Image 1 (cartoon, rainbow, N blue to C red):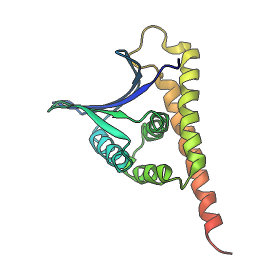
Image 2: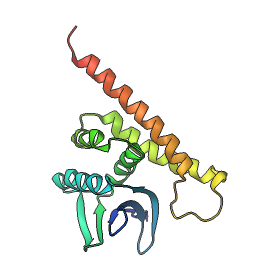
Image 3: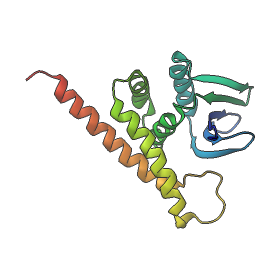
Image 4: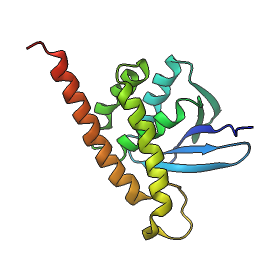
Length: 170
């Protein structure tokens, strides 16, 4: 029997800037794959939850003053993970947030595959990344996430640019 994976997004707030955690796990056990911190994490979290809500793809697990936890539908978890890699260290994540709705609507099927593939690649590469030896709080190492994010941004920009050229009549 195949193990069912659960994808979870957690927004933690408080006195410090909020942090967004993307976790995956099975029954009772959960691992943080990546973590975003900063002033815009609340915006990122709420926009992703809003888009996923339109598709019935997210359900609240816990909400309190300091923490919000939402489960993501299993088939969309890897897409959201890849999308969060895209948003990592972005200076203007707001400009990328509208893209998620287009991807989930099926406007860019190639980006669906790209997000899933980049998450898988980052996971595989992080296992081989020995520069951050020892026990880490997140599975995906910062060096791999930074490189993957930069590459994914360039890939997405190139795809969007080529789409625009094809949509404009000559």
